Image (cartoon, rainbow, N blue to C red):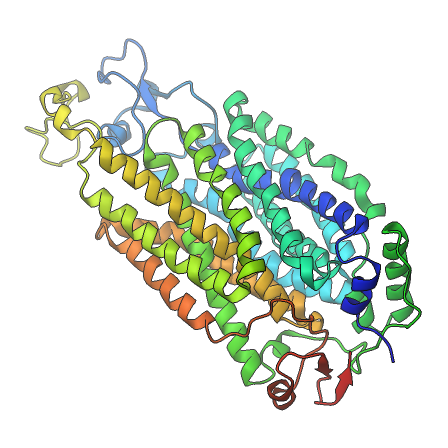
Length: 543
């Protein structure tokens, strides 16, 4: 009788030197290749303030005017020669004048990476189930770096958008594939630790991005600088193995055993004499339909999709509030990122102590409560910023020089934010980010363990695609504040609560062996996630 891969890993090292080296490689990948490129868009597509040019006879307001301020839109009625961008930093906005009637393109340039991410998670994930994980991770990373360089050198806006979309496609495919590849090399007992360590690298990249942006204010140089840091990943080809689980289900048993022998040798362990037990459906190619093969798979797939969508929507929805907290946008971004470090530690402890299900459900509900608390504090806070004496303005299009409309300085004191409410709002926002990060960590591990190996990349790819829909929609959820201040966080809170309740229908996977092939519904009911696994026709194979 042969051994399962999980049983072999227990003998040769579930988290030995080989796995630690692999985690280090993928932490480097998450930090320098993926993390930088994801959050770089916050700064290279940001909009600096504007000010009147010196000696202008038309533009007479003083100071720098930023998005959200009362003077912000007044430049749209001025000749372009009478105002200029503040000398704070350059971006795609300053490069192509994406303001006033063209300001919609700001959203296009910043959100296109998520659209590409959506496509990459689906199609490149599907490709890796046919060609293997190793090729997708490596060549997807090289394609990502190449497209990032093209975006930095783009002379045209359409070429910039296209290249950033390609960056998103490569991130969506390669990052998901490296996560799956890493979890497939780690034993059951250490899978949550290895998976969460990668997100530490992701968080560190988020924290380092504003540091780069603070010292490099030119958007083209900034893009090239962070991209160059990922180039050494090209030398890791010889240290990235193919997934032995993928090889096993493809019937390439000899190659899978050779990789396991390499793991044993590097971990200084003895390879068991027993061979690998082969699944009955080896070589069979899975497809999208296998996610809906029976009632249990339909339930599992749809709930996980919704959980990913909600986690991404809340995560990015809360993150979108960081620039409006006040003060330096670089410091704000850093603070909303650093809170993820204790969240990752909490996720590791929670998944080990309480299991995967509770680590997804409970933090998701707590995040929704904290987010709604933040918006309640906003409604009790006064408006901030400057007030314009609008006598004679009446909300109509500006017909007179802006100098006619001066700041009403007598009202400024009453319009300052209450410091207690401001501190409370920041605290609640950080708590929301803290809890949703725990849930997001958990749902990655949870989904990877719930989907069998033969369809894991398809399942994770489509789940990640659902997450990208959530991240893309978060901007529009935030826009609902124009209808009512409670709507954005109300939508996120209700979604998180519903998702948490639905996840209660899923089984716990803590310390359970990973399924290699799809199970028939009747056999799954009988075995209840024990060591028996089945082929597509319901035949039983003991792993």
